[in-house]
Image (cartoon, rainbow, N blue to C red; front, side, top):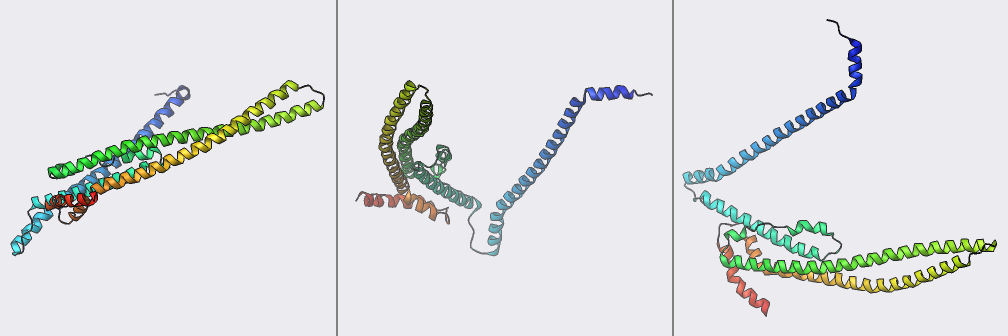
Length: 295
């Protein structure tokens, strides 16, 4: 069998770009397949570890219960009770974390140095509240009342924040205009000097000189107006920023204070979450504390 080397060489030269492209694509696909294979192996290993850990965690209470029951010791709580205790502890942790995060976010709303993008994540803090599933109805109603006050604070602070940011934008626009006038004034001075130099050489430029003088005076008048407007707007911005910061601190304090009794009891429940008295204690203390606040 005779191979036409010249024909093969011409074919390779004519399709070199296509061949190289397919070779590069094949190499990329091989690298991606290798990466996906390694990631799948790693994911399966993590899943296996979690499965083993879950199995061990589920078996530990039963093993401890069987060991103590067989040894004649004090009976341990049943696995269902232990799961209920752990669930209540998780509810306590989640609720306290949610309330603290919301309180901090209310304060962040009053900080104009924080960009709006940085506040988006905090606005979604908490998600669904597991407390609403397990707490008695009076506790749920009190918690929802505090949540409604939180929403009202958020609406008020957002309105004040938008107004303060609008004033800040106006102040920045005046500052940009002042900078532009300063540059334009410097350019007029340079052109006026050039015209004077040409006039000294006998070049007539009277109309152009009068135009430059008129424009210079107009810019000077506008510059004085901007200075006055900036002073007034700066005072308004500072007043709005101070008012917003104060209102944000008050909102955060009032929201967290409304739930302080519940937070104290939930923190105490971390060690004995199976006790339903965590909610009853708050219900007993709430009227007394409300009368103290009213006094």
